[in-house]
Length: 322
Image (cartoon, rainbow, N blue to C red; front, side):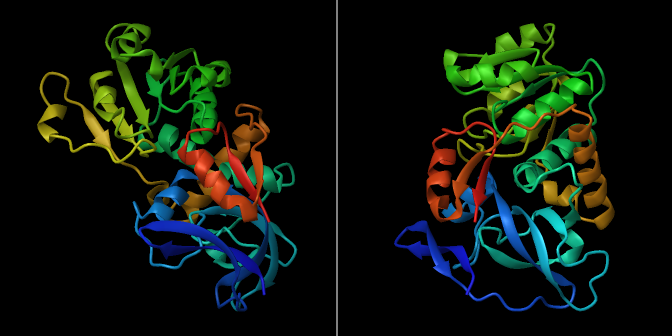
């Protein structure tokens, strides 16, 4: 039988266990694919720890690339042997899986499987944040947290291309050189209070948008860094769940906006998925966004990848290899 990582509850902690599971033939509307590369993302950690509850046991992972090995009844537009990738389908930590054909994207020849597995979720997240959640305008000053992370490295390059004044934030000094090539300015949060520094770099008023995937440690400070009528985009919580927020704090003379977008709401339809993936592949093809080689980890060592991610020991993307 094919092997897969499963999450099982052990005491009060969720653990990753490598074991064999049976994969049935694809159902109508599904294809069966053999993974060649699997993306690792913070949402996988949230699922494993129960922050975003999942029924146990389950196979984690939201992103992968591979080759179609079988077609279910009624599937059109795909063929056996075709290279495909996806984001947003739970169960990618596996050698073989079935997946809904309508959620798969055919890979162009100039995008490798490893690259696809490292960018589909993060890259389409960047596309949605910059082009649709709050479309950036030339000259907009923005603050992007975790600028040396998987989403951050892609999004800051893209935002710079769109003409934004990009201020990147990193959590420690050793990550500054990683973020610097993609940003106009980089601040290090461990250096101390940073809100006034951000405002000064943004011309005194504050930034038009803060993209905050850190959560608990930064959210309220991120609000303070906004210019009047600015928007706080909260799209993650690597430091923990954001604190409760008094909605009245958004009002007053600054009249702020707060949104909590999910990528999956922005690629809910087939048309949205195809548009987002096409935009991502195009900026990579043009060299606007350069993808750094990800850290490769054997699938059987997925637990180590999670520990590194939780300990903020990674930069860029992590990809599991079956």
